[in-house]
Structure formats: structure tokens, C-alpha cells
Image 1: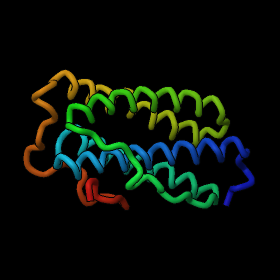
Image 2: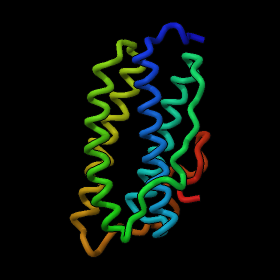
Image 3: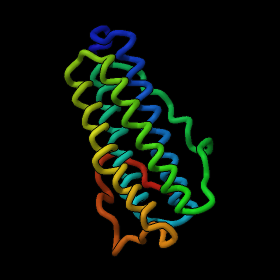
Image 4: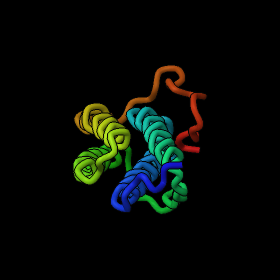
Length: 161
């Protein structure tokens, strides 16, 4: 346990990042529950599960208690997949800004690395996927071909269940 190795500010950074990832996961899982296993939501929801696991590993490494995920049942619901895609764009822009702020408040290189990786995934993969979804407009999100990748790996929940 390395709990004393973190400043209170670093602990709060980890808590805020985990809470944001919990919220994103719950939001995208709700979209899947409401509209079916559509892209980009299935892929991004699975990625959010991996992001949660990356943060949980830091909580475990530093001996921090893991906060509960209070988001299921408390998140916004959308009238259509298109509306959810537009909200996804806004959420990923805000997510990138949040990580920029959080990274400035951390000195530990392992934490900085995880936060930068999460920010990069948000800005270079998730945001463009939601932007493409918005550009498709009334055609909306796409159904996956066959199964979707990533099923059965790690200690993750299944999105939309």
C-alpha cells in the first residue's frame, strides 16, 4: 500500500477521473439498453470499462478505497440515437478538458501516464467516432457486423446489461 505516497489533491484527481468514467460507462450502457447494440456506443462503452479498470488499478496500487459507482439510473436518457451522438461529442470534449485540468494537478508519473492515455482515447478515438455518428445524421449509428470485439476480456461488466 502506498496511500501516504499521494497528496490529497492526487487522491481527489483519481476520484474525479473514476467518477467521470463511471458516468460515461453508465450513459453509454443506457443508450445501448434504450436503442440496442449500436455503434459507436458498444465500442466506446467497452473502452470506458477498460478506462475504469485502469483507474481501479491505481486505486489498488495506492491502497485507496474504491468509490461506488452511483451513476446507473441517474444519467440522462436521449430521445434518439442521433441525440445521444450529439451529447457524446459534447461529453468527450468536456472529458478532454477535464483530463487536461487533472493532469496539471498530479506529480506521480504512473498516474499522469494513465490520465494522458485516457485523455488520448477520448480525444483521438471517442470524439471522432461520435463526430462521425453526428455527420451520418438521420442514418444514425450503425449496427455492428457480427459480434463486437472485446467480449469476455478482463473484469468488466457487459455494456447495456
